[in-house]
Each structure stands twice: as C-alpha cells, then as structure tokens.
Length: 180
Image 1 (cartoon, rainbow, N blue to C red):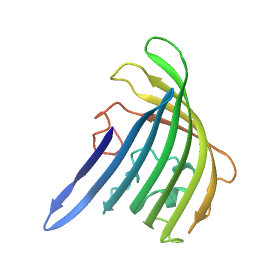
Image 2 (image 1 turned 180 degrees about the vertical axis):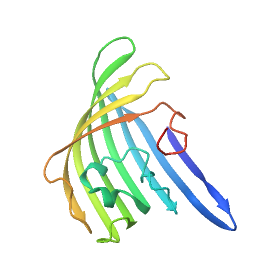
Image 3 (image 1 turned 60 degrees about the horizontal axis):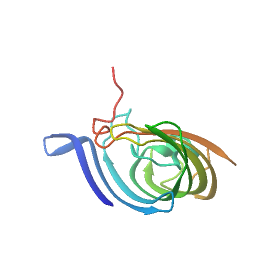
C-alpha cells in the first residue's frame, strides 16, 4: 500500500500568508510474516506560525530528544522505517504488536537562537496497541537511543521513552492548535 498526502492550511491577507502550514508525506506499507514493513517520508514548511503550533503533527519518534526550542522549526523533513510484528491478540478488537524502528529528522530555522539546522537519528523498539477493526486509533510506547545528532544539544541523553497516539484515517485533519 502506497499513500501520498498533501495538506495546506493558513490565512491569506494583503498578499501575505499567516499561520500557514504546508505538509506532504509519502508512506509505503508492505505485508510481511506476522506483520508489516512501514516507511514514511514527511516534509513540512511553516510560515509565520501561531505560537501554539508545533512541527510535525505526524509521528516523529525523534521529537522527545530535542529541547523545546528545537522542536518548532520553519522547515522540517523526517524519515522512518519500521518493522511491525503481531505478538498476540488481546481481544477480538485489539492486538499487541512489537516494532523495531529507525528514524531521522532534519529541522531548519528553529525557534531557539543557537542552531539554524538540527539533525537527529535514532534506533528503537516499541509496543503498539493495534486495532483489528477499522475506526480506532493505535497507541504506541517507544524506547529509543540516539545514534546521531548535529546542530543542537540533546534534551535527553541515553535511552528515551515516548508515548504516542495515531488517529484513524482522517481523524487528524483539524487546525493544529490549542482547543478552548
């Protein structure tokens, strides 16, 4: 299964864009014994972002390694490869999966004044609470270790733990801001 996604949002006034986001992603998923391979490439450009917006609303396992000022950037590219294996079913609706993954991201023009360009690469493994029926989100618990970093200090050294939630197809299509 190959998936391409292009998403843009923002405000235009007087020939200028504000709070604008342009995201593009490519995903490739291939069946394998007891699971699948997943590869994702995501790129993003922010123009005059709102202060409550963050880079990469999509899954990026490298984010927990970066200090807050390095997470928001005007441009970002991310790449990940994951091998997901079904460990055992939990019920008729849920299964527990295990995963090995590698991920890298690159950010330009970060919010912090120290670095203009930051690169991060990690290797890790994780558990996934995966739905076996459509219409439900996937919860992830990742343990990773940084293998490369340039341009900024790490927020965390050594092993890190990350928790994530991947919404069902289309559930994440909203303006990425704080809800009042």
